[in-house]
Image (cartoon, rainbow, N blue to C red; front, side, top):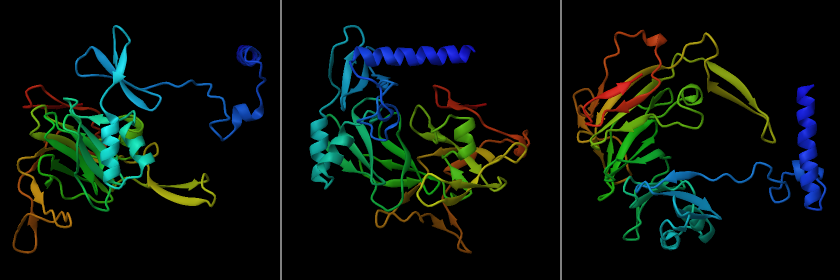
Length: 323
């Protein structure tokens, strides 16, 4: 009965709003697939991010990124997005797409707010907001996922082919930190169950920079024990049967390791073709990538009954804490 009363109250409020606007609600107002016709009952929430000065925050309004003074409420452009748009157009990106990229509310700034990472057409770009220079960091057919700046802004990290890479912003040279990424082995990238149930829906990043920008802690997930779950995708016009790694209640979870990569010991990737097959070749065809990665001793835990729920660095970059 209480739910019915609440429903009637909601309907009456909607009706009163419609009357106040001299317009009755229609079926199209509520259910139309056209966003210009459908009434946005949820409003337009905007993403707020505190700026480095602690006195202002970033806010996207009317497709513009603004710096808003937290005390006075006064706002101004956070940076000259028009310059970035112009540089993107010079690189052959269509004007509409360049404008969208330059004014995206989720632009990823470095800690000093002096540079931006852009991900366009599966490649990464670096833009210096002070000098107005745009640099292409990657150029290949593979997708770069979960890009991030190192705390000092000198490196950009990302996951490609389930392996972790870093690229030197100044030179554009890449280093590969892990080498065993595969369909069932995920380095620095969360599988479905970890992002959905542990780290939060939509959060796939599974690596963390040390404050001194010398190390990256990461999760290595082995999906081999996880059974396949068959789903039918009914959203598309023609049904698509999908097989995904998904543990139901009682099924095994992915096996997890916690690794620490030393970026000073990673292997440089040749610029030609960006082929990640470098390293010292040993007898028998084995390629060794040095001791860039070491794994935390988890022998006290049962591998089949272990989840790593949180990872963090101490401020001195000497210790990794995990839960």
